Amino acid sequence: MHVDGPEIIIWDITFACPLRCVHCYSESGRRPSRQLRSPEDMLRVADAFIALKPRVVSLAGGEPLLIKNIFTIAGKLADAGISTCIYTSGWLFDAATPDKLAEVFHQISVSVDGATAATHDRIRGRAGSFERVNRALGLLDQTAARRRDEGLRPLSFMLEFVVVRSNVDEIEEFVATMSARYPNLAAISFNAAAPSGLGSGVEFGRTELLHDDQLEMLVSPDFRARMQDIAGDRMTVNITDNLGLIQPPTRSRHREESSVMQVEPDGEVRWMPVYEGSVGNLLNEDPFVIWERAMDRWSDPFVVETLSPVRTVREWAEAVRRLNARYGAEADRERIERRANGAIPLTVAPSR
Image: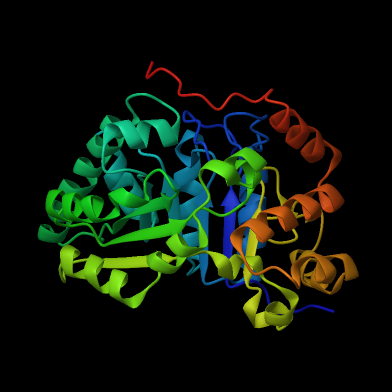
């Protein structure tokens, strides 16, 4: 039986990436890109999204700007009345990129994970990435002002900051610096690292996942208010502990609360973001049937048993590992095993 589709779709359109982020949820740059080689197949996936009628489609990765026809795909979605968003590291920007993005994307989200080059480059896994991302932000800021003055379609851009133990103390400096440097910035979102992909590893949990008291501080009303005061009234500061992504069965069995579809580069649909495992491919199955299958996974006894007792981020990480072992494809389990054995490097790469 067909059901209402997801409110939000996230398409990790490629696993290729110039960076090597220590927390990478998709493990991009360390695995085959799996991106569809045929532009026609990419547009078929876009057609499936349009049929589902989501409110938002976000193109992510990996680095989506590596996809040659990214603007065609986004334009098709936008023309269908869907709000479009792109997540980018800013590494591949040139002077023409902001205008091209503004024509087809309603929101441009740029990843920055530190107030200093030392912190950002270490977390993002490549020397020079802080310099590159600030160059991209400068181009976005200038273009946003120019397009507003010329009466063109607006350019809206924001920053995404993944909060880990080694950068949590830089949040205040980050807000002060970025809000002053980029006056046309629309928002900054601070998102506590979730135990997904590389973030689900045991060592990452020991060294970088926030402690419970840090999570409580992060989302406390006083901290939120102080960050917003620093930013001023020209931009918005959003903060989340990401614990809503746990989706324990007691909270998520109502379909309207499970409204995010995550799609892998080749059209495979995960049963839910964060957790490994596919429930079908949009290239050869009815998207509504796939979505129904994803929703039904939440009543699986193993899912209920595993997620019901989760209360802390470390309990969540352990639950993620159990669910990945149960539902991940063989290639997923092999990749996780290689990572656990140190076969996937997590060090900082040179800038060029």
